[in-house]
Length: 171
Image (cartoon, rainbow, N blue to C red; front, side, top):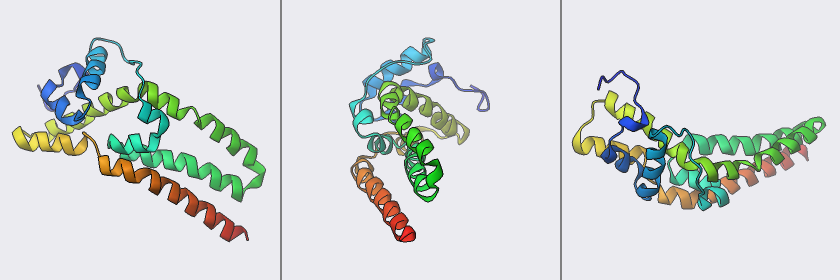
């Protein structure tokens, strides 16, 4: 395969995908095969994504999405308090965001499968082979158990800090 050509889900080797996914490989492999077979979105249900979305994102090493989630939760609070005139709008936004865990629970596996494509493409571009390639894929994918346990505490501590700072500046 040409290293500059687009990579598709069906072109990913089972070994690369297994190295990227880590635990629960069988569930994600079923999703990958369905997507490779032409079904762009595969419904599933992930209780951890539904109940603890920040932890699940960190567990699956989706750090950029976890940071984005934090911003979408904190910014409306901050803006709503600092600019009271638009508080109803920020409240409506927060209500709409309550659907995020449902979406993540239904489509989270798709997200992980599609993310694997970009990481495996990067391994191809770096021309990684053998153990070095496997280690790279496990580092970028797989799971972060420690981060998943720490994430909720940091998430809620950061929100508490924002609330305290708002109270301090408004007092």
